[in-house]
Length: 400
Image (cartoon, rainbow, N blue to C red; front, side):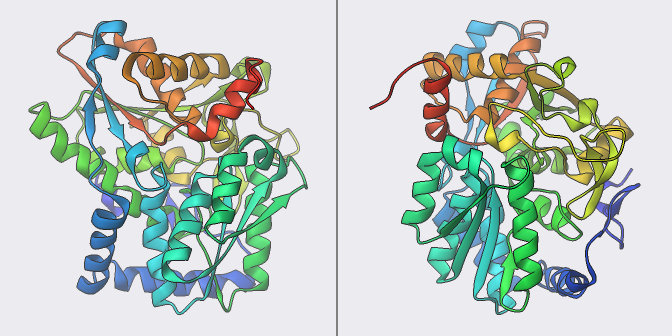
């Protein structure tokens, strides 16, 4: 299969994806699709994007051989794709740089964004400051409280942070409010979506901007390992960091890929954020995908210790890859992710984001059963500075 042919001209990955939005947004989405199709091959746009990624973001990010972690776990060699070392501390900046340049070329003066863990909000505020754009970030009030360092970072960068108190008070409802803002202010506003969800063309363009991660791993692994890795793993909420790693390698059948969802208190408990593991097909935020919904089709609440994975849907390309069987999806509990968070800090001196810790926990669960000749690449999608208050509160530690 030629994976590069998807999505199709209507924005579909098989039965998933599409464009389920109000008529008000159909024309802006068509304009965005046309502008992206034109600019993605424009030499000047590519040169500006590549220059920003190298000199502003700090790419390429290293592919790091975690030797002490490898010895501690036994079995397969563990490699970390260090997206935590990017400017702003996560993979999100790869996408916001690209989308902000699109906004500039479209003549927009204001950008809006949704955020869960705050990393996308920080990345959006960062690039808005650099380009002189007004920035408004929508964030669920529960996430505002558990991610207070990133809230302050956004404000330092000049963004307005709007707490969302409706619904589940987390990422789903932040995205709802951002969509409402866009409908109202579509003439001067560009919506910088933070994940590979939403209506077409967002799942495609966010994937494309993040695919630099996988392209770098192809080159780096050939240089450092001498071949491609045996297995890739990444956490999956909406799924942007995972698809950025996976997409460039889909054409290599020898490379196994595993996406790791937020298992919360355990998928069997019902308190989780794992639509690929326990959801069903439905429409959410403008696209058809796997969602967590009840028997009446109503979107259910989610739970994860990680704000960035606390989402009841997933990007449509992930849903398609699951059904094709090309990528396997599993879930890791809060407790497993927190244990991995501590272990990486203690063994390698790297404090990972709680989101990334889910992928680390999965890698640990399989590494010992693999040969030392095998190589696992874990996408370390972000750093964990933002999570120290969450961890401390959960473990009864008072920070003054």
